[in-house]
Image (cartoon, rainbow, N blue to C red; front, side, top):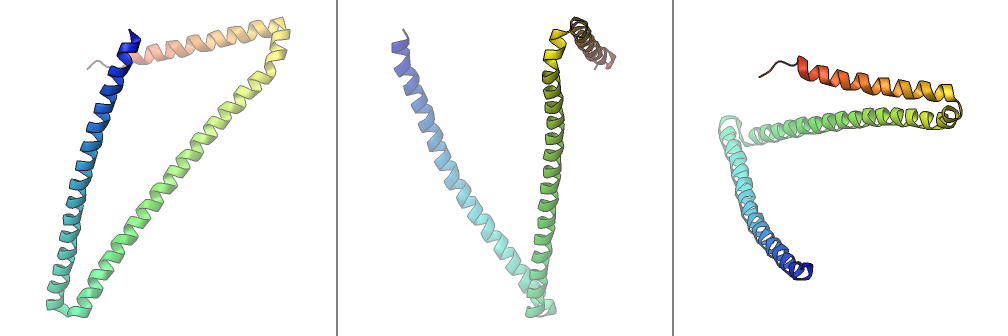
Length: 151
């Protein structure tokens, strides 16, 4: 039964991939043209602004104002990207620090495991503490669900 199903699934996957690739090519071409027209409109808007300001202040001053505005916008975007990258790096460091402390605790627990297994009183205390921890954690999560107001 599976031998007859294999070629059918393969042909179905090939049809889906072919349809996906056709759709991808079509969308890439259409988005490319849309981007071309958008960039053309942007360039013409900047040129119209320069011509308008040139009538008011003179052409060299107008071009300097337009270039200065573009420079200010570029610097603003650069600062925004640098700030976002620093925030992401800080979050990654915090996550790494939290994970390393968890790994350190797990390593400490694993290194103490032989001592706990050899000593019966320590084994009973650790089992009781683990069960207590699990029960309080479960009770806390159940309490959080019942304390929330109903919608």
